[in-house]
Image (cartoon, rainbow, N blue to C red):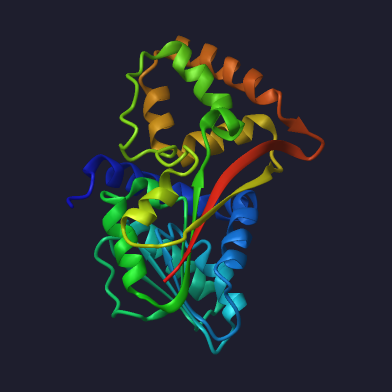
Length: 278
């Protein structure tokens, strides 16, 4: 299926900012990466694929788990993301990690290559999630584990909702198609699990991961981080007049202020972890 050009453009434009904020993004989403590694049963010597790796996570974290005798591959359709991931792997001197430009529904690997395949917040943006899942299962060895992480609803994730509720006050947004590429495409419980059943997985499992997104930043810096991470937010803010932007920024800071903690901002978060065995 043809990739959504708007999705590709937005992630391409965001790639430099995800590299810029690599360390804090790593820490904010580390509980999700750790959960995927655990659920995929990754261990020393394994060969693992990270699909939609972005600037390299959880692939870079996996490199330490599989050790020098294991291999980690990261695939992403955005060249800027892949280049950022490879730069970080080279900086760390990781000889067991390789990144490639590839779409989820056309993975450039032979059948039954990997002991585990993971994807953190990727499947929601696939042009065809079903085809992407089939490809990830194809490259898994028999008995290999697939582990996927997708967001629950915005209402249960103030990391998103704190700004969305401000923006939607000022912008008329049509109700999105529930199957359009979007962060919350698989937020309904059971939706991704049921899709795995449709593509031939007999007993996929799903569980709720509750954690906290910790961002050790002043609230003004966090707002800038969120605007830079999201091309959609950047475009929306840029469309307002200078006077409107001042007011919306004030409202956004007030909304985020609910989550200010001693060391920065702290958000309760909920993610669905869906797993399958080939």
